[in-house]
Length: 517
Image (cartoon, rainbow, N blue to C red; front, side, top):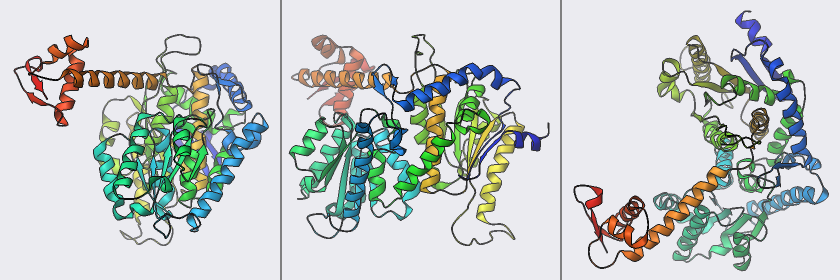
């Protein structure tokens, strides 16, 4: 079969949506789909169950409802339907009042900046949308997405004299997420140091009755938007988590939701050849033998989509990276995701992709429209957009010539609607793939284990603080006194010394280093 015939045979085209999926360079072997049919049938049934409100996250006994967010009529009952429609109406009303000067900062004028404080999906989704669609944002948007004090200081310096015109959005379902709580407390202290009343600038997105809910209520914050337990962080971009900041930025959230809704509808088809999400999931399965044996490299050829690979890292890796399958067997599943924008990475890691370790498949994301308006010719008859297309096509061909497979996803341009299409396509592909390999895509025990380990270290750190009095002491001295590992104690001591809470005298080895207050 010629390349042209292969291309036509392996192209899924949604002409009405302006999106195509090209699997022609994935070398999917003849008979693969027939072999996979029993798993495919199960995956379709699993998706129907998820969308119908079945317990799709058995470990936490939760429904999984992010597909309802863009079509509330799918919700399993009227209570959940209202939990979708009422917040959307409320956030539209709130954002309209902010943007039209009906809700204002105490200093007068209008809000000009937005500070989003969150971690993981509570920040990454809003960051991705803002970077993709916020070039004409009504509010200049900043993020606290870590508990790094230097990073917090840098962001506050960027806000500068605009602090009294800054609306703060604190996002945490439980209200107990340490990074988000720390960011909120840092922001509150900075506002108060600058004689600005924090509560008059603050909005919470959280679960009803959470620590953050109670704190915002008792301190009379501007308003509170709900987060429901049937929406996970990595799939919360179309809940209040993503829609509140997007609406405040003036982004067309109805178009955003409509794009996702249209993709959901198209990928409910049980005809595999017309279901882009199932085809994408099957391509991943084929590339990695259903075991994640190859990494997924995401290469969007558009600056506005440069955070797409980072967004997909969480969506794919947190969903699919699991030790056990649904039957309790140890399977160590997952697909590693990395990437950055084209054609920038023609000059970075594409060299290794073509000639180095053959442990990946690439995904090119093509945006057909170069820019709004006319383009100059940078060479006779050639524009910058022509070069971008040339680099995409050239890299795709060069990789395939070297035996590297790739997927190409094409959209006409980056709009709220097409961004909704892309996000829904990958959300559904992840759900399908999880069914194909028989894992729970909707929990994150590894993340919870990391949080528990961090809490344990903080307890050790405070024990070390209490024990570090009097004469010079080594890590072994304090480990014996506190009944902790000498290495854990040593790292606590190094942290205290680096932050001016102790002094360190280096010996020949870490065991001989001494510390004192």
